Image (tube, rainbow, N blue to C red; front, side):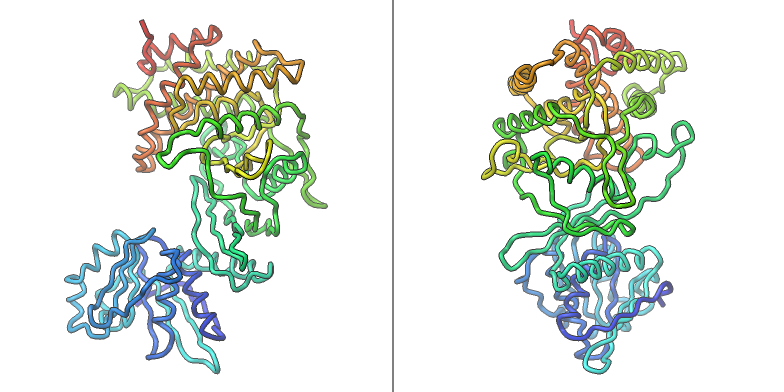
Length: 503
């Protein structure tokens, strides 16, 4: 029997039942079992159909009843196995139907769960549909974690209703490395709206100077920074999403859809023209001074944090904490740690005279939208900037010309650097030598961070896919280390076995 929180909803008609199926498809994840109970005609099949069509992102998906086959499997974004146990001979047959394997790899949707009560997981989500007046009553009993996810999607449905989109057919868009997730829905003219689901994050353990990682790295903890930077950049002619509605307390935003086309081709390779336009957009941004304090609401002003010594140092420590032991099988010695951190302390001192302005922080291919029919800087849609800081402008140039997830070949790299430097020279008052020193330091800082981050994602989080970026990251680091200001770091990396010295 399922134990946990109880959620009760009145569904006034068939459309409301479909909407609940739509919402649940955005709440469930692999490993969840949704058990649907109710009399014949209570709406189980309708809800299951809406659920499956949402995950498939296909309103026309054929969803046959598995009454006779007992199970129907769907290879979707999350695999779903739809079980109908009405004709199950014995509950032990559930194993023969592949239930355990299906649950391990995806979601199990079970109608008539009463026929295998003892074989279903006790952690299942139980949903009972009963007739009530002219509608239905849905009673959901779920474990705490699953109930929280369900309450969240229902809160988003209420948010959409308040915004005038209560009937929206929601679709999953993407999740990112943070707690943010995105969905979309279409309007009658086929245009889309984007919904940002930004749940308030947990505090997290202290990891540096008694503070949790997000506070040291100055990562945005709520929606105020996103709105502040979006509005400020858009007022200056840049293409950032318009904010249609926001609930700051819950972390829910309804924003403009800037498009779906990126700056890579269908094989994941950089499109030179689009990268060049991105660099031109960045040069234009660096030509104007962005205020550090931005009024967001009548009661809230966002202060853009500085990319300070603590944040830079914490990030480059990832090499010490994760990369070296992975690379050579032994952790760094105390002497190696002390020397490395002293080198970085000096390099950060060298940045005191560097040009500073707004840093978008992750200005690279995943966060850039190509807008073919626009002109100038509006060709470049910017969609990720909530963690923006004030710091050396060279950081963002390193982000795009050394794209962490894409190989930028030397010819394109030189073209992009030449484009940026030419545009900055034309603006006047540009210290090119100082900028190039800052670029080398910021490139090294970013790539040292990534060299450790890829290993941490593998060893701590079990995410092996990021390791494919390691050779590229180290090749980018080698380029940065060519600058004379980084000679001590270059020698240290060679001795530590991170980046060998080329003969």
